[in-house]
Length: 245
Image 1 (tube, rainbow, N blue to C red):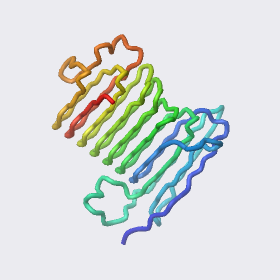
Image 2: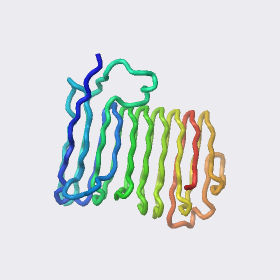
Image 3: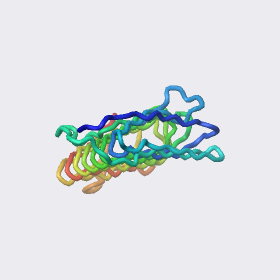
Image 4: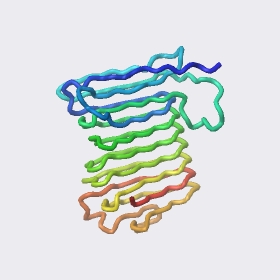
């Protein structure tokens, strides 16, 4: 018999935090993270689903000298039972978390097999790690960010990463899928060097990037550019696409 889905409300105070390390593990469920519409005195709010007769998701907040560490975690691996075939790469529960956009955050977002979607528009982000065992990963990075370090990985789903307009400084991006398609969208004014591979699919490269060797492509001005991104983009079986937006 299918288990009932319950909901736990999340609310963590801002205190005097100006920066935060946020670590979220949604168990086997889907995870969506975006910005609070109004910051106020709240660091994070959200709704966390869990299955009946399992442990309620936990959150812990430590803060010192303006630095907050927020950990949100599911320890349950329970499943509802029968699932339709088209649900195979979809989590059984949904977590929706909203973060204060005024706080400079390093973000880790993980799922054992659900989809992970990060819409970081309008947020202050320096480091992102998004990972799922088998679902899709979608990451929208903020405009005017600087010196980003981004990792987006999945065991079997697709990966899509959109780099924000006005990205500055030296940035790095790793986007990987074991079997799905991987797509990265790069602003027209941002220089890039791309290491792109696919085991069984195709590499589809925007023509503004010249091929340097068998697996490497680059903007003509990459070495001299002050604003740039170095990318490793790979899939075991799907296509790898780099597009200019």
